[in-house]
Image (tube, rainbow, N blue to C red):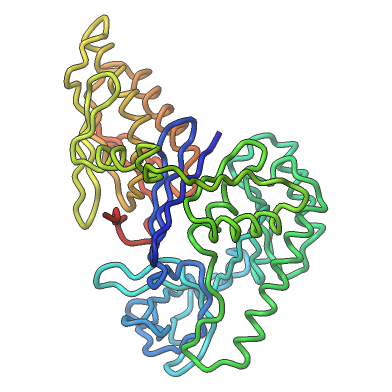
Length: 395
C-alpha cells in the first residue's frame, strides 16, 4: 500500500510518499519555480562546436541548453548512420528546432535537451519518431511481455515508437489504445504551436509534481492520497477521474489541528534520513558523503553484535545497509556515481547476496539506475540518473 501525503502552502507544495509505512520519496515544488524536465521548447541554435560534437541552444533560460549529437541523430539505433557525422552537418547557428528538456540546469551547467521526443501517459510512453516498441524490463513474464509488444506493434504507425510501462501489465488493449489516442492529440497540439511560434517559446510543460506522482504510481485499489488543501484535492480528484475513468480515487482532505507532516511524523523522519550519519535498525550505521563528482556511502557495524560469528555479523549488517541505502538513495534523490564501502566479507556467496538485496530493494525506484558490481578494492559501484538539483527541505 502506498500513501501520498501532500502539504500545501501559498506558493509551495511538499509531497511525501510512503510505502508499507516507510518513507521512500520526498519532493518540494515552488509554484513560481516549476521544473522544466519533460517540457517541449522551440529553441534557437546559438553555436555549434564540432570539437565537442554538441550545440548550445537558446531555450529562454539564463543559460543556453546543451544538445549532444546523439540526441540529434535518429532515436532508433538501427536507423542511425554507420559513421557518426559532424554535428556541424546537422545543425547551423540561427536554426530553430523543437527540443525536449531531459535534465534541469544544475550549478553552472545549463539544461540538457534532446530531439528524441517522448510523452509519458498512464500506460505507455509515446515517442512520435522512434519507430520501435519496447516493454518495461520490470515486467518479468515473457508471455505478458509478448502480449504487450504485440498490442504496441498493432497500435503504432510506421514512425511512432511506444514503451509499455510497468503499470500496463495485465491492462487491456482498449485502455492502452485510449492512452495512445490522448498522447497523439497532445503531440499534434505541440507541433501546431511550434509552427506558429518564434524561438525561444515554451510549447508544452510537463505535469505538476503531484500530477506526475499520480500518473506514475497511483493505484486506486490500494493507494491513498492525503492532502491538507481542499482546492488542490478537488483538482487531483478531477485529474484522477479523467486518467482512470470508472475508478473511485481515495482522496482524503486532512483537517486535523496538528500540521499534516507532523501528524504523520514526516518532518522528524526527513531530519533523521538526511543526516550525514544514519543508523540502521540493527545498530549499524551509514556515513554519507557527497562531492561534486560522486557520493560515497560507508557501512559500519556500530552497535550491532548479533551475529554468530564476525563474518555473520558483517553479513547481516551489510544486508541491512543494502536495503536501507536503496530507500535513502531514492528519498534523497541521489544521482551520479555512487560508491558503497560495505564491510569486507570473506565468503563470495555473502557478497552475491548483498548485491541481490540491493538490486531487489532498488526495484521500486523509477529513476534509471545501474548496479555495476564490485571493484577490485571490494567497493560496490552504481550509477543513478540525476535530472534535478539537490532536494531542498522547506522549513
